[in-house]
Length: 250
Ligand SMILES: [Fe+2]
Image (cartoon, rainbow, N blue to C red; front, side, top):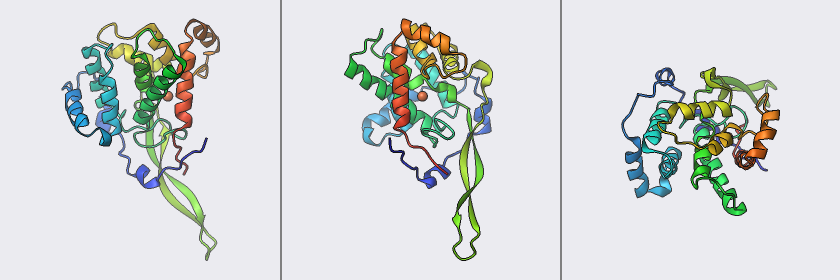
């Protein structure tokens, strides 16, 4: 799969996470105003020009099976974090500003596509959206931007190396309290749910969306994939999405 190189200018323009936002990560009472109505109104006027954040919120609000209280709880929480500006990784897929929200949309669309093509049967029709959009919320407050000196070439006259300062993402997990990856996403969702909103099928697909790559998961994964084969399809969707996303090389 060809990996597209990102425009470095776009990367440099990325806004760092504000300290104030980081300190509010566990405060779910912040910004309780309804952010969905405003975005819905603007996106219906100009869908073609909607941002990744607007697209995420539009898709998320289209989920019928989640209660309004839980939708509002999740959207309010995300609004107080770096979810909409964070990368999806530090050096792999979508390691660029807004990479996380773009990857979440990508996985949701890929899982919907796989569902249609392979006639996958879910307990609830919106489960691919729920899983795709929310599987990686564990990556909130996980990456920081730092400057790095990068060797970009050699001066032809002086033969000296030429270095440039560039912004890169580093792994910097500020919320290690609730788990490592899939387990952490599940913990966040259970923390944010206001009703009994998520099915075991959805939570297990989110928990094991990385297959058995999470440390200590080998035995559990082989059991779960037999009980719930859709975890395998979720892992496939996450893998396909990741492989089609750009990687910034510095
Ligand atoms: Fe993912």
